[in-house]
Image 1 (spheres, rainbow, N blue to C red):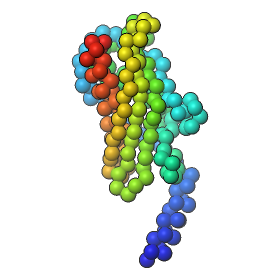
Image 2: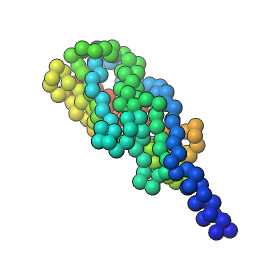
Image 3: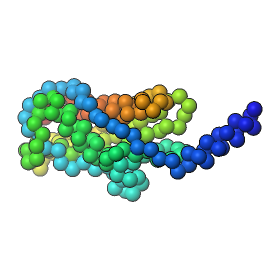
Image 4: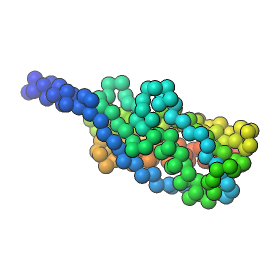
Length: 179
């Protein structure tokens, strides 16, 4: 029995090596604050992609992970568009050229699917808010979500991590009376 398990596991590893998949993600805002005013979303970067570690639309992965997981659009666009949805739902107007600008660097976008029961998703983002060229707030948001290891739960864990990151950032900006 043990020999069969090892052989089956080796076979699965060989089949999965080089496999890739694209995770669909439709971010639905769940705003934690209300506000008004006009803001602009400027530069959003996915630092691991800029360093050549991953593609612009690729998740980082655990070192022992096999295969690759992608989004249908670049990570920085996913984060920018999701934040736009959050801000609009909160009551803000988002348009280019506003005096108040938000930019962000995604430093970790890691999807760890190794394990038998759960997957882990990690998101680390540095947000900055400027008025004109003056830095008003720099905030490092970190989020970690676990989900059952089922295909339907993967997008939910990702959305939950993004949402928590935004909540933390927006609440910090609200506490500083910036938004």
